[in-house]
Length: 86
Image (cartoon, rainbow, N blue to C red; front, side, top):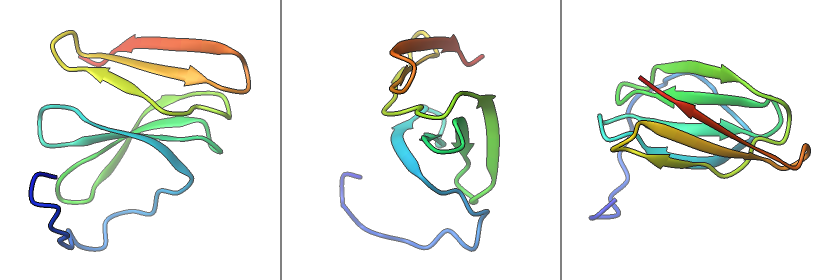
């Protein structure tokens, strides 16, 4: 992100309807899919791992690396989900 360079990490796995994106401090990215209602971890090699099955409307997320805490607003429910990702 510092250089703003774009590089291809290979074909990976398709993930769509992304809303929030945050680095997890371990070289991966956490992303929310607002239509499917899911929280994914995308590894540097493009592998996608679903961490949570949420309701539709999971939006922007905040990840507090020191606490390993993901905070996700559920826009259609008017709620906030907070979970530790150990």
